[in-house]
Image (cartoon, rainbow, N blue to C red):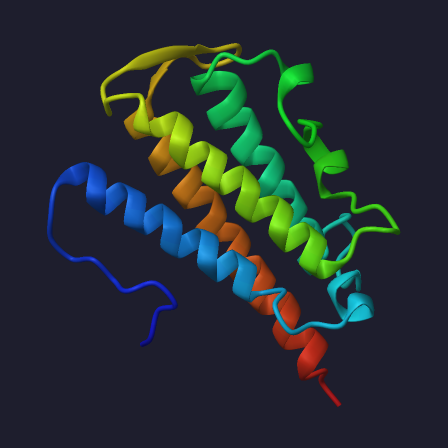
Length: 164
């Protein structure tokens, strides 16, 4: 098995959490990289899920969890928007695959900078969950992105290798 980001198997807990999250970020991007605009927008399920929509949704998750919840910014001050639910999967007609990849990469970089100011045990209040710490946020987002990368892999496989 090869990883686009090297697999880190030892080290401090924070380093392991951050590299696992970065690996899942990279794998999510890889599910859309190289798809045509039409392929990236192709809906193969009844939900609004598309390969490009998964990446758009992930950018929203980055902003909600790191800018809003951890960083304390009001949602309207988070860059790029924080719409939740099915609307977070919506990609405007004028947005391209490279645009959405760049948006996700910008959101991820901002998340890294915000998280760097916190210790793993530092807590903040989530409006529905109550107290959460940075460790929880790292684990939740890594899990979410891994799941979505799996969805993206399946969609990509269906797009590139349709059953005959």
